[in-house]
Length: 423
Image (cartoon, rainbow, N blue to C red; front, side, top):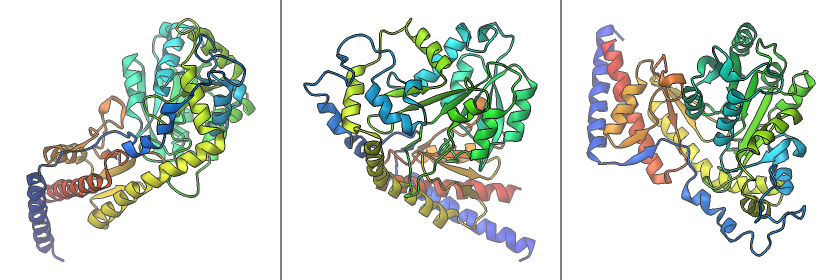
């Protein structure tokens, strides 16, 4: 094909894309793919929680859950989630309803107090920085911005963060105090960390003696296939490497039961658990143990969590399959985009041509399809390639999701072909 013929072919494709977009805009859609919220049907699976704990108000250890106390949380609930979060029961706390809240408080306590192994408070340092694997979770980045913590992007690979770069940065700069990690079905790529990545994170030299891995295991039980991905036990790896205090493990039942009324967990070394409990005792007389008891009665044991998540998967899998099917049918072989095919978690990453993500999101919004802002997957909202778009398939109904995905592909074709013509 000559250059002139190739240009003519692109012109024809662009005209079709313009017509498809005009048809899309004329439909008056109002669809939202912004956040990874459970759909109402998923929440319905946990409706029985509202009738619990019934007339039983006593925990397994005899605690009256209606009263004050119990800073560690109910033992029976911690036993249920110990295996899920790969943390010994004695080193796992069951606390409030939000793991994000626990991450926030852990940073605040490190800023205003002294971490185990630390020489001084973080607030007394001239500079504090965190390593941020990208693409990553926008709420992690928002916490850093809130507290003036510098963010240093590190590229993600199919094995997890680029460990050569992580090791270099952590060893060279004492201001680097931590790294954000979503180790299983990561947000938004769906990457699960390899055993080698976990081992290197646990063992690497760090210039800061109080370096912490913020291990946000948000999708520990959120499988989309019949072959669940397993990751290495980071807490054990840190202990075996002589760095027992290095990792903070976070998790919750927020996308297992009720998103706004779940239970959040913190796991770490005995020293770190003692540190957090001491700080928490100044701000709370204990967590909501009534909610913890109802969760323990509803889920029963770790096998109960797995069975419940199988039912969640049955609802989610058709939506993720639809995303893959539509992307392949509309964009496969075009060179206009690539995308992830996660085995779990809540997101699909769509990577369009460099310089196109913001325009795709803008065009979609004008056609009534709201997406997470381009750049949200990177620190400071700045994706240097302007190429990453996060898709959240969980909340819309199947028909709305498919409409939104078809519309999104129209926008990708329009913007991508226009860029090629101008290029």
